[in-house]
Amino acid sequence: MNLEAMLIAAACVAVALTYYFMDRRLTAALQAFNEEKQRLGMELAGATARTEALTREKAEASTDAAKFAAASAQAMGELAQIKERHAALSATNEVLLKTKDESEALAESRVRDLEKKLEDLRAEKQALSARVSADEASKQQRDKAYDEKVVILNNVLQQRQQELDRERLAKEQAEAERLRLLDETWQRHESAVEERMKLMCQRQSIDYVPKEKFPFKGKPDNCVQICGEHIVFDSKSPAGDDLANFPNYIKREAEAAKKYAVEGVKTDIYLVVPSNAIHVIKDTFLNFAKYRVHVITPDAVEPILISLKKIEEYEFAEKLSPENREKIVSVLGKFAHNMKRKVQIDQFMANETIALLMDAEKLPADILEEAQKIERSSMLNPPQERRNKMIGATDLAKEAQKLSAKGAGQEINMEVKANILKSVPLHKSPVQLELSDTADGEQA
Picture 1 (cartoon, rainbow, N blue to C red):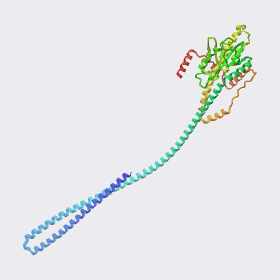
Picture 2 (picture 1 turned 60 degrees about the vertical axis):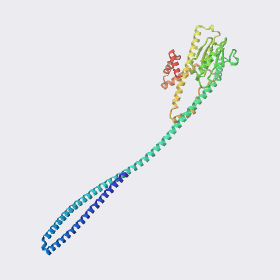
Picture 3 (picture 1 turned 120 degrees about the vertical axis):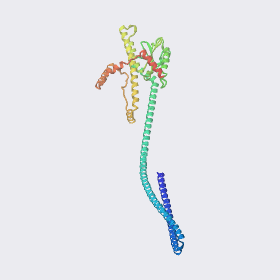
Picture 4 (picture 1 turned 90 degrees about the vertical axis):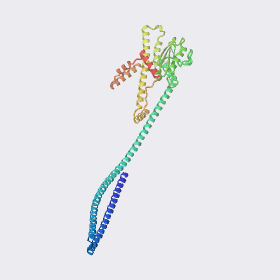
């Protein structure tokens, strides 16, 4: 913009200088014309004077007519030449004056055009200046809004990072607490099973044999005596929170249980493992040449003791009638199936519950925090187990009827749920076992 203004100013100066020098040339030509005209006038006056002198000479010397005529003719010729030159100078003067007028008009027209263009440029400059000012003001507003949004974004990112840190810390703490409780449960597994078996033996009037009084080789954690036979219940728990080697450990312990396969000890040996570790053991029944090993959970101990206690009601096994023997076999089979189904269903519900808890941790932070407050203040109080108090089957049936009535009141189809559970196979088919092994291999 400054360059265009400078160019226009330079053009104006050039036109002015052209007009100035043209005016000077015209003035000089006019002055020379006037000087020439004055000179010619003086020559005319001189010629007139000579003519007069010649006339006087003619008068004075009329005798020399030829000389006077020649001089007069010469003077007339010179006068004619002077008149021609005067006419030519007059025409040149008119042309110069006309050229001067045209040059002045052209210069004035160009000056007017340049002045108009200069005014247009000034107006455009003002408009551009106003636009630049508006753009600068708008840019300041945009910069301010951008800075505010950047601050808001940084705050949001910081809050999100804090939320992620809190979630990560909460998960780490929850995992650490879970591992601590798991480790504590496994550490207390042996003593808990021992206390539970003593209580159940006292309740069922079964002889409990402490490990230090076990009359054979080896020292099992728990032993009972029914029908003159010692039945071994050996407690086994993982060494740490890694369950990868626990199945191999159980197999080794099952092989080492052959030391109990002696006369006087029942050939069915039970290895009691924690309920939250049974899911990693695929083979819960191991059949050896001289003995059989059952891998069970603490919940299955009491039904097994009850079923074995039923046998003790008969003094000798050979006195059992075929009908009673069939009943005992049927009860034992149903007990085993019931215990395994309970373990399977508990494990399924545990997995679903853990998945639900993991989904609950993905809730918004404020809702999750309020829920965790309520969780910390809540406590479940299941019915306590008391000594010398039987859990009657009739009472359990009544409670089941009450539960079914409550479910029906909430429009819950209890029978459908039972049917769905019945549709889940207890034992895998050979095809399922092959698919399961393939999936385990792919995961490994």
